Figure 1 (cartoon, rainbow, N blue to C red):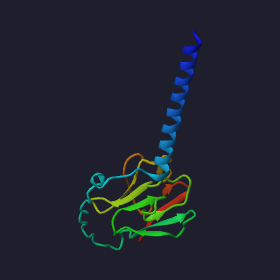
Figure 2 (cartoon, helix red, strand yellow):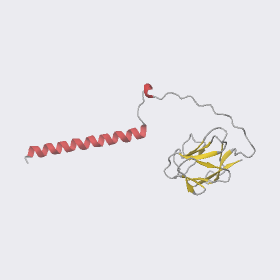
Figure 3 (tube, one colour):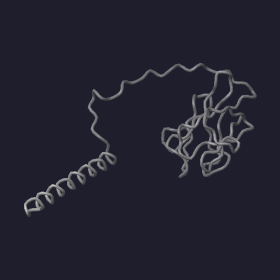
Figure 4 (cartoon, helix red, strand yellow):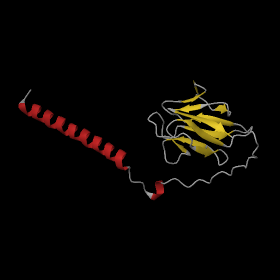
Length: 156
C-alpha cells in the first residue's frame, strides 16, 4: 500500500471516531437537559373522564396504608380515584426505595365495587400475598401488597 492510502485511511478513521464522539455527547446532553419541543409538537390537553361517586359502605376499604417500610403509616384515599404508587412526585404514595420504579403500581376500583392492584411494567414486580402478579389482581383488606421492601394493605 502506498503511503498516501495509509494516510487517507488514518484521516478517515479519525473523522469517524470524531463523529461517534460527537453523537455520543449529543445523546448524553439530550438525556441530561431534554430536547427542545416546539409548540406544535406539544400534546393537546385531554379531558379528564368524570368519575362516578361510589357509595361508601362500612365494610369497604377507605384507603391504602403502608404497614411496613420506610414510609410506615402513610395513607392514600381510595375514593379520590386510582392510587399510583412509585418514586415519582405525582404518585399518591411515594416510596424511597431502590427496588421501586418511577410509576410502579396502581390500585383502582373495579366495576363490582372491589379493588384491584396492577403492576405498571416495573422491573422488580409487585407481589400480592407473596405471589408476583402479571395481570390486574383483586385485593381485599386481608391481602398484603409488597412493592420493593414496602408492604401495603387496604384499610377501612
